[in-house]
Length: 70
Image 1: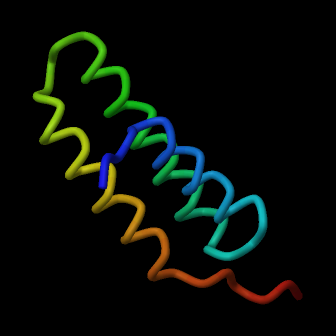
Image 2 (image 1 turned 90 degrees about the vertical axis):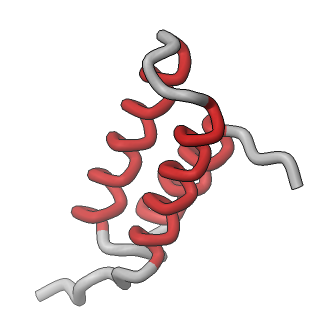
């Protein structure tokens, strides 16, 4: 399966905007993936490493369900 950094970012963003994951973690994960996209685009990180780290970041975000509202 071919993965795309932008698709991983979009899935992670969708997870927090639909309250599938904790918003705090989801936002931070999305920002981290944005940074990986920038590093990949600038040649500062090999594509395979950027993809692996983005998938790990997405997986981490999915481990944290949203907290209940008060």
